[in-house]
Image (cartoon, rainbow, N blue to C red; front, side):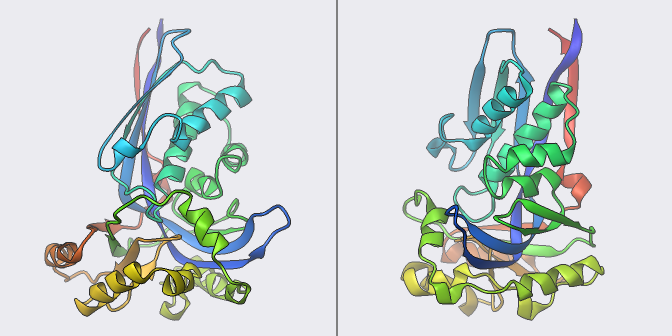
Length: 308
């Protein structure tokens, strides 16, 4: 029987142009106000249909992938949740190629989970609309609904309320991702737990960024804020020293992505990106020259048809 046999999807990283924490909710989560964009650094996820009764098999490769397992990868949890919600037998082979640093504030795990939902939606010919996929995605993680849509979005609630903003001309960025001696477990939860009530804000910076982007204008520099920068300043001397080293070598305006530790800077068209990358990597960490992605490119898939 001829059938759709595999779907390959990109799973792009993200950066936060602005991220404000508004306060803690009664359900234990926090209300946030953030503007995010997908970027060209991306994992690759290939889902292949397996024979009936085969179940789920999982293979991962790439930098940092040794720390991942099927039980810890939320893309596998996304597959199980989708199979249950759609009443579909979970007979698939998963091949994940990691390029996004793990636990780095770039949304790699959430993006992989969203790519899984989008790929299975195609592989299983379910035709769920994005809004329905987003509702499912919100059960997996707060950033996952954003990655269902991709591009540039204004996200509120705990991150699951999505306002899509228009695509812009690509911004060129350099992501600096410091190497850490150990992977911090539950890093994001720990960062939220370290917030002081005085660090909550009203969301006016993220709102202004969203308003500018909605009119096709670049984000205002003074509004590129991230509440977690204050937490790092108070609690992590190692990262403060690393960021100071970046600044001393020319990265004067760096902006934290997510809960960190990755930061990004805008680069001009004439910049010597290779020289900049080497300079910052000599300090410690990895550098990724990237561009912001359109919504269409963020959701690109490749399908294969064969005989089972």
